Amino acid sequence: MTNWRAVVIGFLVGVVASLFAFALPVVGHLGAGFVAGVVAGVVAGGGLASGAWHGLLAGAFGGLVAAVALAAFVTLVGATVGGPGGVLAGFGVFAIGAVVAVVFAIDSAIGGAIGGFLAD
Image (cartoon, rainbow, N blue to C red):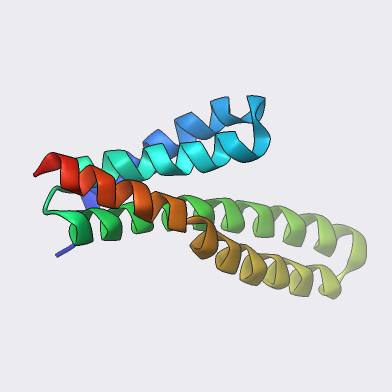
């Protein structure tokens, strides 16, 4: 069963860590996702699989929130400037963002597995 408290705490830690990650763009963001996964895994406990699951959810949730925000911005600007095509652009941005969010959540899943292992 999913511990949503662990997922939300991991997501919030990931958001805060991502703010500091701009100092090292690629390594910093991977590290932020990893830290978010570790925290989600520790809070959830339950071993490797449970930690990985909660870390994956925390990382993917963060990416999906970012994708929704970016898609809303693109839709708003596109609809204002380009008409109906802007709405389609927003849907496209969300679709690509959702796929990227899941791919980038892999480092959070690895961190979550480590956190779940450490918690038990």
